[in-house]
Length: 281
Image 1 (cartoon, rainbow, N blue to C red):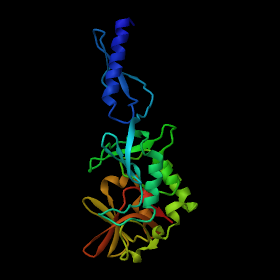
Image 2: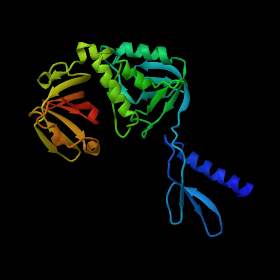
Image 3: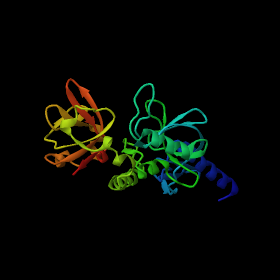
Image 4: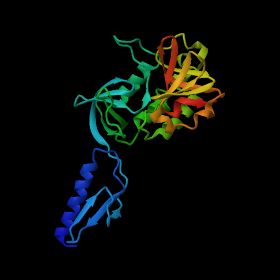
């Protein structure tokens, strides 16, 4: 390969790299194409005669400075953008819009002490923004510590997996299981102990834990429902069903449901997006 060819090769790979930069991970499927005249190009799509080359998996982390910690799971960067921490939910802090929840101020203070005016690395998953235009990210300190994971480990946050953003989900599930077993932080607070679904009509605001036995399955155009009785169900978006085991495996079994209750026409429903929020006992 001549020097000119080497330059063209590096330029081609750099072009591919920059094109994939918006994604969080390099594609491991890059193809080298040489035409009849000997011209070499590269693509992330396979074509006739293309030869696959390997690029190492690498997760991009973007350096930013934190201007303010808003609450236990939301930051404001120096550039003014808001960041919602992926995979976690912390109790609400008091504001003019809502009352504070037990554990909310503790989570905010912990995050403030860790991040205020510090540089952090943001790692994105498949979705970079939510409907409120907040960045969705995993946050890392310069020493490599994963802030989202540390919130869960210390019992300061609940797991809140939102497909398709599933990076680190297994780590999060294990960390939450250990925090719960050790009754750390919010897991020791009376407000967050599991209650039977018969208690759903009293104080059903905020993140909740309930137990019950689903009896029937109902399929509709957008959601599939696990019905506990005529007044109470959980609903799963049909697009998320592939993350779950067969729903029949839940029928007649005691389960714990974790999430937020919505009420409509005297009926109560909890939307479940990931099996980590629907636990067989």
